[in-house]
Image (cartoon, rainbow, N blue to C red; front, side):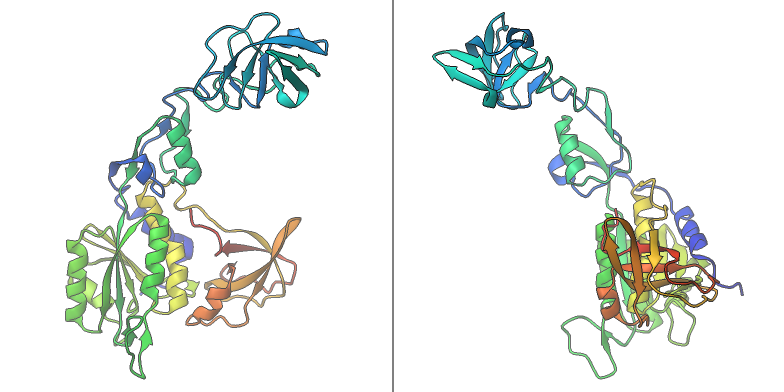
Length: 409
């Protein structure tokens, strides 16, 4: 039997085994936030479509106020949505407001703080250079410019940009369907009475939250006891629901009570691998059940969440067509204290960060690293990554971390 595979190889195999991005659908832009683009977004218009004032004041010809004070005749007003339709002549000014079209013939804005207006005239107290406080047409973008790319996720900024570019509807990837199955006679749902030998199930909630944040829709298959019949019935439901990914929680190993792999095999699982050289999370399983990708996560709470971050989230992003799905999202940091030599597994240690604007974060691993301890993970700010067989490392040495307080996308 082959040994555990490296983390990078496990991720590579999971992503390589996916069928490709899920299908596209068109949605109203008001419903597009959080979705992933299936097509590039090009500007349908130029923004701004006309030279616009950046300030409140007076549209003028710069040459008319080259020497101050200078008196100009006010010939009209230009406001947002109500532009002045005439042409500015010598010795003339137009009262103008921020965002309004700059009249033809004007080439600068005399801000109102530098002007005195009375009886239809304005006195300029300071000269202004041509082009001053004028936003030229196309300053933001021009018709035909590609503003967003396939695989971009529509957050508030990108949604606003697509709207400004003239799009009422956008082509996005449908949300991948992720079915989540918790297994084990020892589990009870939150709020349900628990026997002395049972614990409250939390992993499914955590993985579902990760999946939704990554852009998926989730289906809770519930908690299934340790019988092949119950497991097979739940697996049948996942396949019938056309889940793109089935995440099982617990039972991914090969102990007497770890029946998930056996149930999947009886249902036709094509097993890829089931052990990865990492901590926490060595008994991690991957395979295919028909058109469904199967990712079996360990049952320990911290293990399931860490493995969800490392493998489930990138798989969802790949199904959404995100070209960065498999990218390394770690960042540099500095060790806060010395670390002993590591064994053959890649470690992800729960840690706190000491940050300052003028240096890399200093990382302090928690003393307690048991994979059952959600209280430690809940207070952690990052995962300290230690490579397999890393030598003993002194405080102050460079290291890599994966932040937990930043969004996935």
